[in-house]
Length: 101
Ligand SMILES: [Zn+2]
Ligand SMILES: [Zn+2]
Image (cartoon, rainbow, N blue to C red):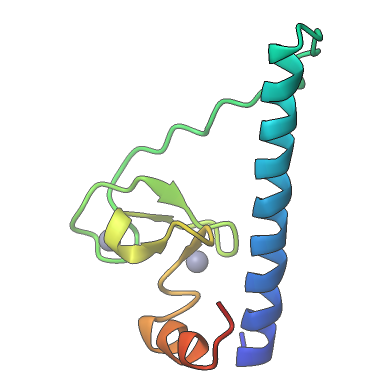
């Protein structure tokens, strides 16, 4: 992935997150108002078991939405849902320096 692609990916991801948060607030508001909400599909998170596929040391807790690998907390950007193999710390640092966040 080149830098431009990463930036686009991150921006889309952050936008989607904001939307999800908004929906959550709306849902809570509706519940407060006593408005019945149909439970939409399954919301439960995928159960991730096994060793981190990046460091192969710690237990994996997340799955990368890009490459599908499972990763531990230290090998994963939980904010983005992407492992550190897809976006390295160096790339992340550069992006931060360029004020993409
Ligand atoms: Zn790891
Ligand atoms: Zn990945």
